[in-house]
Image (cartoon, helix red, strand yellow):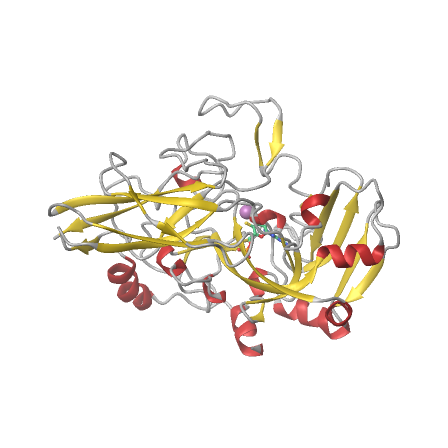
Length: 415
Ligand SMILES: Nc1nc2c(c(=O)[nH]1)N[C@H]1C(S)=C(S)[C@@H](COP(=O)(O)O)O[C@H]1N2
Ligand SMILES: [Mo]
């Protein structure tokens, strides 16, 4: 375990050979006949960049500073996202493994403070583990900008395809248990997190310090976690401690967690002012000058991905084949899934499994046929427990390109 964490912290050289073999034939992403879900910035890159992390090979890298990479959708076919396939989104410079280890030698600490805490306390990681009951939940984390690569007119920010999402089993203690141990004042409205990463400029300041409403913080599934899929959290995903708030934009889940503050107002940390907000009233696509009221994104909208078929796959015509994937709906559940092979003219209803627990993504599958040889697209559309469906196109353009939950589609060749 020690080795896997350490090696992740090392950046290795690009190996063109790896991607040539695996990339072109297996990933099949080199040429897309439609402005598909992978129109993102590196969709056409045919080698892994030099700055990639050694253990994160199934990722599509978007940028080095800050380091960002999304998961190839087919790597999300497993029930839970493997640690090595967990996407990467940084806002600043992650702490080096040396820096983390130096802190751990003294005992990694988590401070609980803020104006709405009765008795501020600092716990070591060992104390957290000893003092509070442990819980494990599978939780879906999706970047608020997932899908931005397809937003038209395009907006600033990482041009994500649909792979900035992960779901796996996190183990830790409940935020509620820890906050109650310190005492929560009646005027508490929000929590905020701090990690030990710093700004890209090198200033020793948090590049991001967000949080969630106190109600969300006190839910059963909101965790202070030290383990992901039965192992230490991968270095780049927040080792050794992370706040995990499933169903909300993943920006609410603070990595390399060192402090939680309980606030008597909406937290005002870095990236709380304009980021992860959408207009309250719909704006005309392309209106970058919108100055109206904005709301903080909370529960993420319903979404689904097709994980067992890749773009350019060859499919036997007139023969049933399985289409499967994952679906999630923020704080809600997914009730229904539909698949179309004719651009939404007709839909075939699939089966959606119950989530293993609240806020976990759900497996779905169905069988479909393509009637002839030739070019087809397979579309998937999920419907949440309030009857809201995924739209076919971006539901509401917004200046930061958030919340694109348009149907995922994959193109195939009938043979
Ligand atoms: N400390 C810290 N926490 C953070 C971030 C960060 O830059 N620093 N990025 C946030 C954002 S915007 C996202 S989408 C997720 C990404 O988590 P991952 O890198 O484990 O995929 O972490 C969130 N928590
Ligand atoms: Mo994000």
